[in-house]
Image (cartoon, rainbow, N blue to C red):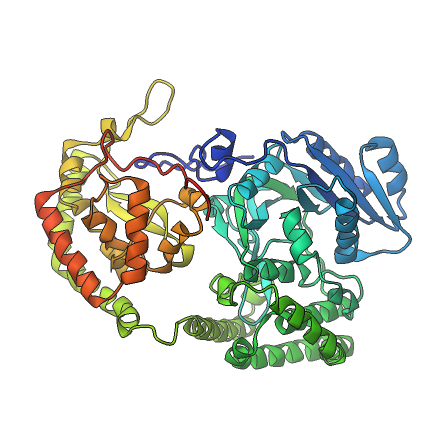
Length: 605
């Protein structure tokens, strides 16, 4: 697969070599290495007249570096001699024959039940489309990402377009407040999705599911089998991921696990539309609590009006399909209520566990993008989703939340704007000196993780030269750090461009320092709480030791700030920051030009 090369002039690693994935750490036996060396995996594939795809799939499975897997193929009444071909060419496959087309969810549910029956149940289930090819290390890397932390229930790989190696087909699924979901990153460059992330849902095309969580949460809910429109896939994968989140589990995207999907955009027809309409209503009814529904009511009404208009334009069959969704919802109201009650007993977290992962927009289809009227209507709808998203976030604010926490982001931005204006001459001089002494570009950009574990681009003045050994590897930081860079760091002048991050709302003046995406899978559950506040230019850990303290102490101080944050505490940290700058203490960790790499929590709590 061709990948565009990006130069990372500072920091410890490039995306290709960094332990940004738990995969590389696990493979190297780091502190977050897998707990089982050879977990058992049941690969479940549902097929219908797809004999031309199965050879590529079987070959890519046989090439996997992780060998402890068994293949279960659910054949849904194929008429193209699929069963005979499988028996002859893939003898290792366990074939489950069906006399009728079960569709995606029924077929996979049958495969999950068969895979987990008996004493030799697997450790993981891999749900896989029949029209994909896997990278040889795809399974190994998904397993490594799952094994890092026991609360990871579902792992989604990077699904690329077959024949377009650099384009994303799905990096998980994106969820809108109105209940719609879409392939995350669809048709975007793979390099834009090179970091692990928590996602609202995994794509049904491929995901790894921990078996013990399957026993607790179940598979695709049978309620979706009764949707109008028959066997068409709907929101069952989204529903499964939501159940995992509110049960205290996590759904993550692992970009280093790659597969290629022979994706074809199928035209919309009435039966599929009916299934999508009813599936969305089922998802909302099963998972959103009353206060969330009331909060979303304006955008839900607007959405249904838009769907009604779309149905009317497509004809009577589509209008009947739209109405059938509401008829189904009313006819199954008692059953839906019973399922909600059962799920409430398993709920460990509120809806905020996943609603913060929503997004207000999704990429527009080319036909919508090219039509000015449709594009304007879509923008209005996106605006309604954005307002609903903001309202959902307000629901997350505790009733007794202090006024300082509400006012702080506003004050941060005002202060950052004033500081940038006043310091603009200094910034211009420093930029010129850096360009003269070190070279261009004068700014160092790096992806960091911020509030609610959202990635953002952090800016700093460049302090290191490019330097590589005879093997083409970057030299250690202390060898590349220039005298000018050392001076800039000692006075924290290199951090001044981060005022732009503060102005954008990505950072605060005071808070835990933002760290690399590579560290996300290595945190314990308690350490992850550092992302409950915006990262800061300075913080409690910085004034209590800066880079000279170990990671455990640093995280303990970050969590202390999360629990104690307030106006007086921030003011105290600000005063101590000035004193630290004047004394220039704790600039680097012993034996390192910068803070040493965080290798992982001692245990996952």
